[in-house]
Amino acid sequence: MQDQLGGGAAGSVYRTLRLTNTSEQTCTVEGYPGVSFVDAAGAQIGAPAAREDSAVVPLSVDPGSSVSAVLQQTNAQNYGEQCDLAPAAGLRVYPPGATDSIVLPQELPACSADSIVLMHVGPLQPAY
Image (cartoon, rainbow, N blue to C red; front, side, top):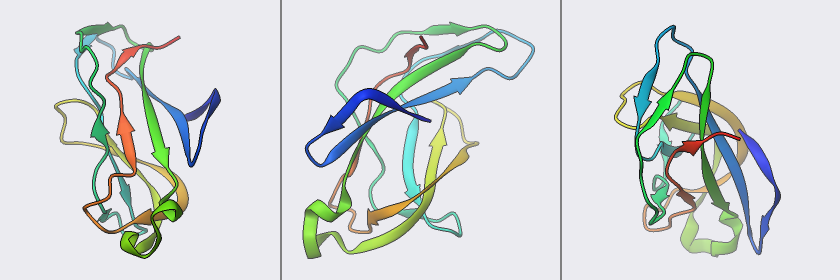
């Protein structure tokens, strides 16, 4: 995961999620990665990332190549008491249509209230 240049907005930051094909075969992916905050035990905290309303296209990913998605994260402290702050230890990321995931370490406050969506994710696109 990396920050995008100029990726700040009032109370939020934009990051790039990069998924790499580590197999020896070309694969096709389409859609949105699943993203949620997790605690140190790996349990989900609050609402998962909402999907941006953008066009989705199938992408062919050669071995060693990557695709990416833009992730907007809003500062949980913007929401006050209704947020019910909880310490996140990372982000759980699922490739589209997959049940296996990885956890990217990222320590920051998250909202445990399911009614508050702190993240928005765009569809996978060619990585540049």
